Length: 171
Image (cartoon, rainbow, N blue to C red; front, side, top):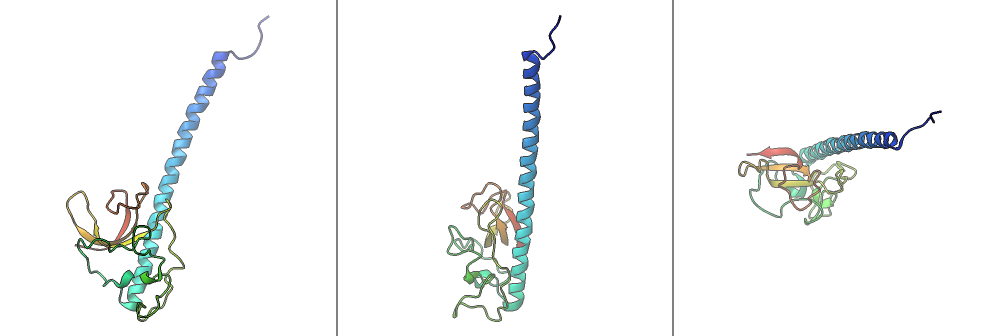
């Protein structure tokens, strides 16, 4: 009489198939999660842009008392970006979440324009830059942008191909 059951080979084949299917599902979930983070960053960058537009409407200035649409070509160290910069977008000097004390206050400030500026989905601060190379692969094309350092989380490299930016003005 033959015994019923599975052989060791059959069990190993089933385990291998389950492992392959699990890895396919896991990579699909990670890909979807990364796409969701990128979409979230784009939405938050757009919200920051909208708050900058309202700040401009009220005060005639952009964060850091920058003149609207004035590109500061190759100025260096002019970014408002939190880590590695003098101050970030949550600082009152940017004018988005609070108005700094005189004499650095914004005339006709009606904010706050955002309750707070969140970190991007990768844990970095968003940035505002008035001399950003908006097309780094084809030479220098200056622009004014608000953005995120993107998925590679490189907080010290503003000119990276995975940056998520909203261009306020460009040459």
